[in-house]
Image (cartoon, rainbow, N blue to C red; front, side, top):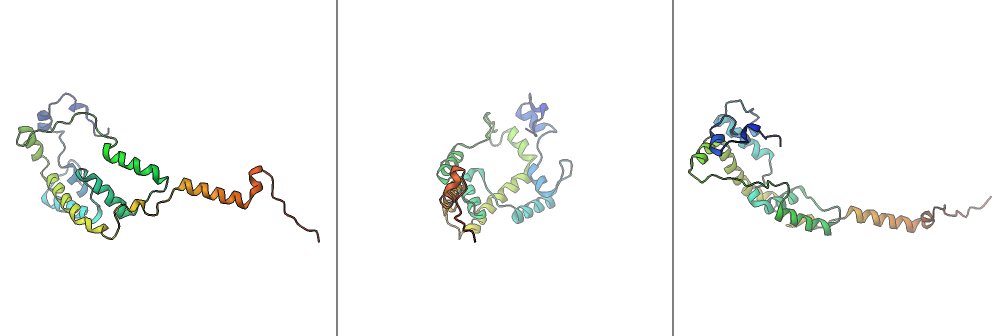
Length: 189
């Protein structure tokens, strides 16, 4: 994990929130092109929001099914390796997830000292998140003309297509399977 910091190991959440290693508006900084050491202002927040509007198709983890469906429709992704296997695999990933944190996550109660300390260090990120929720709603219009379940429409199977091509070729050149060259019936003139 690239963001792991050994100094966090024995800290309480409150100690972390009061430390100099707490994340400080990480998302806003990335979107605005700032380093962790740069002073962040409202101008950077507006730049981050503008960049998000212009360059990002928003997905939300609390709306995972809708987000993935939107990505599939927007980018017009279709299955191309055995759709009958891919759809149950997709459903499994959507319901159980993958690459998830198995450790218990401690979320401090609203209004607690820990909550307030973390919130105060991430006020711009909270605004960016609210804006992402708004964009998520607005961007639903991006896929209005694309049917739900687009990934299944005329989905092909590259493995099946390859097998069909081999079958067609074997019918065109039946002697090829035996390793013999087909007879040519050429006449001498």
